[in-house]
Amino acid sequence: MKKLFISTMMLASFCAATAMADDMTGFISDSGCGAKHTGANGKADTACVRTCIKSKGASPVFVSDGKVYKFDEASMAKAKKLAGDKVQVTGTVEGDTVTATSIKKAS
Image (cartoon, rainbow, N blue to C red; front, side):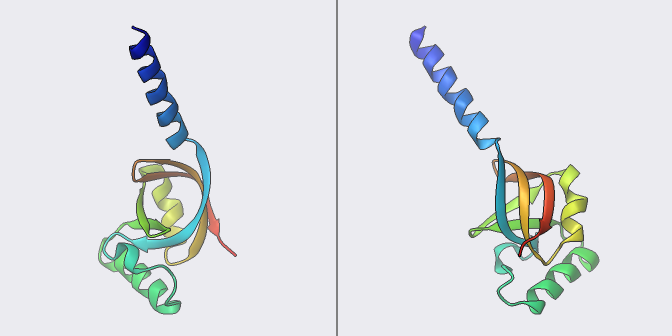
């Protein structure tokens, strides 16, 4: 019984740690291109991302440290407004999904 309790507590603390609010800096790319766009190519990255989202039905995704995160439904509109920009996202990450409380252009 003691081992079950300890295991349960460890799992709960791990889940809580992954769902904590965090600030991350990265680039809003599109689901078609993903990590190909990091903003390193300037206006070319921005144009491609915006075209893919507007004309090809791609969804915005967040690329940070080479990892691609999806946005939850509630965060999607905020992300679309800054598609193709380097941003700072404040929110929670659960698995590969970001729930953003705020998204703003990074300096």
